[in-house]
Length: 221
Length: 219
Ligand SMILES: [Zn+2]
Image (cartoon, rainbow over all chains, first blue to last red; front, side):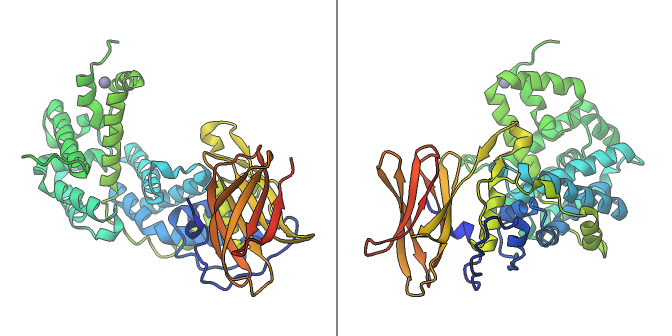
């Protein structure tokens, strides 16, 4: 198994000559300026762990719209969303060394970080119970959003379709739980329904979305 | 506290996966997952579904000046961590530098925060022609282990396919693959069926069978 293509992302560049010093500081090594844009996400994250400001800027630029978008969708306030986005990048920066590519892409990992922070923030400060009708614009954005933001191609299309075809009350329940971090009891209060109904709506919605994502989707029916 | 059945566990699995299951139910569900692989698998799948759902959220442009404020907040780089990087960080440093630096023997932490003191050592040896250093070879621990090497022979005529071969301490040789040299320069990585303790030498051989450069690993 050869990795050459992964390890040397910029072979087309003019090659720097070897610096034959016994121990050159990594930061000096990184000071050899290279275009960072084509660098794979996980390499950029690994570079972030070295503390190189150039890599940090490239990392922030690449992911800031995703990170801010998640924060804004959950907290609904631009100022608070910015605070949360900032905390998320700081956390990613501190924990870059423990990112495990086997558990998902860098984008998924970052999304998880910022989402957890945002949900924690609204749990503390949520001003008033959410009105489920306010979810409509968000649901529209999630089902019609631009393809390149999300999961690779087909997978995300399937999930969007599945979300769009859920009965509206199930779609609201799953978004309130998954995006806004509401418990079944909170959803029951917001929708004025019994808690058991809220629980079964979450469960039914998640089962359908999961099926839409599974490659081994049943052919029958 | 009574033990949940698989059926009861599955009823709560979605809420658990989404992180919205309150304390007591959560504790009972986790207790069940502790010994039920099937339910654990189901919860993992639903967790991935929840994450995929979050990834459908629309991206949004942060307020003006965000990037600048962000960089100020990140502050000076964490200098103390330079030698405590994950393997991938070493790779990126090597890739960026185009083989332009030597690491010596650096100690790396492989996910120290998650796995405890899983310290591992990268082995390094200079690639030489006679007494002149023309490159370097790194052997990274892992399953499988892998090597990364770069060389710059200063010979513009050295262009084309070369192969890398490892020699174990018992004298057996292990071919590990081929890569391209362009005007004397090449860099390459591959997984290898040889561990640190048995590796003696790495060498680069050209298409005529002549040894271009050799690296001896100290033991
Ligand atoms: Zn079970």
